[in-house]
Image (cartoon, rainbow, N blue to C red):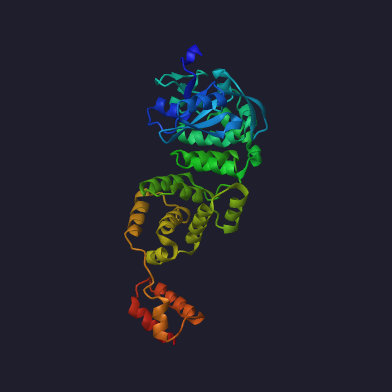
Length: 386
């Protein structure tokens, strides 16, 4: 322990990687040789709230100043089945490091900012953009096959150049093991992939290596994806990850895309409905931006137009796409200028099915003229139907 500072807790994970790379620290996770009971007792004695969020794996969340910090006891694997591990607590920092996935993920940092490289490779690998498994890649993957997807996500975030050959080969050999993972775990890992600048290259590597081969789009084009990424970031889409996800799994035959939802993914109803609407837009949208805005709303129209130009026109010009999106954003979302009451008044009808039929015909007339007719023109059209 002397070589790792004189405290009983060290920072691990993304915060350490960010510190080494000179980036702003985000979430701070902590490792300790204290057991969860000891952590709980010590923190509660200090007036801090402790939540047993992952107690089976030695993790509790300590809440300080309204912020949660995951604190995990050092561990060693007792048994693994490729999906989950049975662990035993440890007091050995090196032993804990040996059970982790990548060398850059074994780095530790004390509260003074001193970084400890337990494997002796983590700092160099991180700075050089090399995602390297700790020890034998096949062994690490056999312990938890989710590490295959984590490998490509980490490479998208930190990697430089092509993936390490022995790691990539191990992922390819273990591709079938992913079928044993839950859709929730697969989806969570993929959603975290898309924000990374290198996500397109990682997806292409997965396609080349047969990783989730039934998920990715037959239309996938890395250059087009790069254009989508830049455009979506520049346009400040609130859900740009979902937009990139939609491009990556789209198939011209919607039934095939729909099958991917149920076989590979666990999406919220909102996410699934959003993507389904985007796919519908690609096939059914109008040449009129106003019509599209009325029928699909601004968000789906913007993303749908972006996806249409990427998928159907293979557009690789971010500036042209950005200009198109800005043009659409300047157009107010149209509203049908007549309501049921207006139709009832002109047609001398009381509320009923016939009013709804007339209103739908007026809407069709209004859309056929790209939402240009005003209220009076629409009411005049109603009169022609009587």
